[in-house]
Length: 312
Image 1 (cartoon, one colour):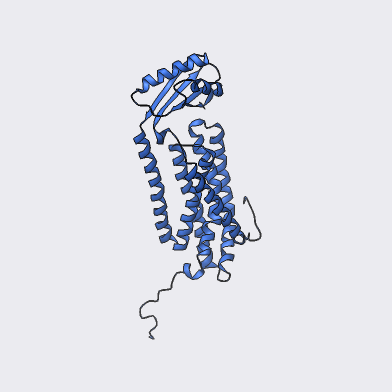
Image 2 (cartoon, helix red, strand yellow):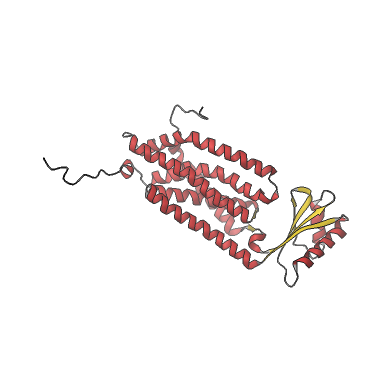
C-alpha cells in the first residue's frame, strides 16, 4: 500500500523562485549569525575541564549558578545530565592547576553553597590545542566531503546535477550551523558528526531524485524540462515522505529520551532531515533547471559501428 497516492503531477518547479528567495534569505541570515554572533563551541573544541557530579536530592540549577558566581568558578556552566540529581559542570581552561585539585575545589564550593552531599563521578580535561585541531579537522572533513560529492555526481549524472547537489548540501550545512549559532546551542563532536550525517542523508535524497529525472528524460520524449522534473519529483514524493517520517520518529525518541549526551546530535539531525528533504526538491532540482538541463544532455549518444553505413 502506498503512503501517498497522487493522481496529478505536483507543480513543484512553479514555486521554485519563491523557494529559492526564501532559501537565500535564510542562508544570508545564517551566515550573518555565524560571522557576527559566532559559535558556542563546546569543550571538545575550546578545551577546558568537564566535571560530572551526583547529588542526593534534585538540583536547583539557578541556585547552583548563583553559588558559582560568588566564587572563583563564576565561568562554570552547569547542566542537568540524565536526571535532576546529576549535573555536568563545564569550566574554561585554567593554568597551573591539576584536574584533580580543580575538581576537589569545585566539590568543596558546591557542598558549602548548596548544603548538600555531592559526589564527583567523572572529570575530563581537554587541552586548547587539541580542541583547535579537532575543530579544524572537522571543517576540513566537511569540505573534502563536498568536493568528493561534486566529483562523484559529475561522473554519475551530469555537471548541472553535480552543482545542484553541492549547492543543496552547502545550503543544508549553512542553515543547520546557522541555527546553532542563532540559538546559542553548544557545538561539540556529536554535533559535528550530525552535520556530516545530514550531508549523507541529503545526498541520498538528491541522488534518488536525480536518477529519476535522468530516467524520465530518456523515457518521456514529449514535454519541457520543467514538466519532466515535476513528474519525477511527484513520483519520488511517496518514497521521500516515508523515509523522512520514519527517520524523524527515531530522532524524536533520541531528542526526548536520549539524554544530554546526544541531545545536540539529535537536534542537528532532526532539523537537518527537514531542511535536507526540502533542499533535494527545491535547491538541487531548481539549480539544475536554472542551469539549463535538457533531454539532450542526458540522452546517451548513439555510437555507430564502423562500416555500418557501407552497402553490402
